[in-house]
Length: 122
Length: 203
Image (cartoon, rainbow over all chains, first blue to last red; front, side, top):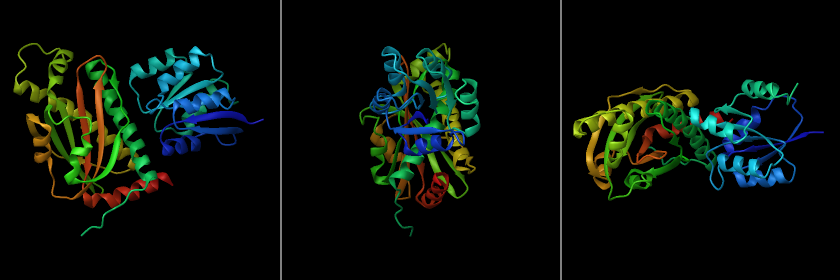
């Protein structure tokens, strides 16, 4: 069965870029969200076992989204994908429970490496 | 005469994302230099008439006293100017963060302004140029004014070209009273090339 994943970013260009950077032949069912609140709704309906999450977004940003996921113990493994590459941003999202951090612009090699590292893909 | 160029919502969104990545790199350098956390905004990308330049400075109030530097850039048939505008209230905190001891006079402020302009403008332009696959050369930074009001600044920044593409990035620093605006203004003649580069990126 296809793995439900979410790509959450306010930029449609960034969502497409992320979608294109997914490993080839990875059997996934992708849901797109344009801000954190949409992503949380999607996770609650079981659409986001894995989520690629941007940080700077309107409505609910990436930090806020991670906080809710942590507080409500929602079933989603989050990989942050952001242009905010300050060391502090990395530490903050790790503390909030993010699995890992991928710097923008994304490329398939890095995505594949992270997914392999956490045993998501073989 | 060049025809007025239109950017689709997709092109605007793409350029906003490119700016987002570029400003992140610039912020990272500033964060490491001052040992702070820089709060990143969503960049504002707008196509506007140069007479509406004040609209691009949405995060600055007319009454605020500011100091500003501008630096031209050119390359790959794209040209423009980068403006870095500091709220004057920022300087005491910047001096403190750079461990400057002594009286902060206009010259010291100018030095701090130039240092930060070099970092932010350089990194941001490099971020944009790498992603769009172009090369920019930068001119000498020029001081636009110190302790001036925003309308005065706009007057001194007014350009000969009519239409411009403006990218506004408002940096603030967490727990500090530091606020600056980085503005990238592209010339009218650059817009069609810029649009082609963006279209290529979106393919």
